[in-house]
Length: 402
Image 1 (cartoon, rainbow, N blue to C red):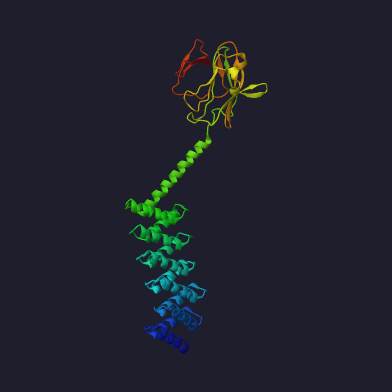
Image 2: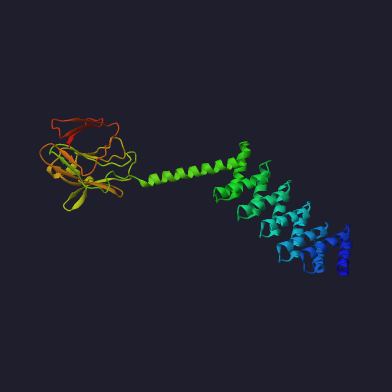
């Protein structure tokens, strides 16, 4: 007791401490007894005093030391308490912080104990002080820090609290936000966790604050944040939908299905149907081929044979690739294929005398194109159906199917 008391007196004389040394000493002893401090109080106290003298700290070391001891025992801190305390003091001196270090330190320690925060309190505290001094924030750092810690633990936020807190302070000062930063921060954290937002909370918070200030939005920041996130998600889904729709391209009706048989008369005309499931979808490339001598020949390369007799019957619909062949000859009979990307259909054209017929082996989907019009009426033969298609040009096609 005499040894410790002499150290305290020696320090009180050097530092000019005017408080009752007896009271301080009793606090230290009470803490050591109640908390079971086994370290040498004399040694630790002398080191702390020596650090306080070198750094020129004029504040009451006694009060702060009791807080450090209480925290170190409860938290089971194995690091040098002297080192941590000297860092706090150094920060307070270099930054010229005039607030009570005792109050802030006790709040930080209390929060770290209750919430089980394992991060370095020294680093976080120095960042908070630096931000408060540089930005001139007048609000209670203790309150904000405790809210940040509570939010980070409850919501399981693993990001750096230091970085986020400095951004919040900077945003509140630059934008002149008068609302409670504590409340706003907790709302942002809660929203980010509930919505599963993985983006930087700092960035989103600054955007919300900037929007609320510039636009004069008085509504809850929580509501504003949800609107921003909702717009972002809807825009993302829309772009994704457009991308998938474009990448899907044209898929032909009857793709991969059975062969379609059509019968026509020599000298007449025939329409070989080929169209996309969506008539407004314009295929990147399409090609008609005819099977001839065990190979598929590109009809666009057979200009002499089909000159002035073949044309696409699209009716101003980009997805309609039907082929109209006029003045049919015996050589026009055979198999045709309409190919678009990885989609194709095969049509077999047979020429013979008599009424033209179409015998599909599967159901035929009715295609309507504009400005083309289609009318159907019965012919003399009740087993036949005749149709006439007008394209808005002098060309007209009339064919009968059954």
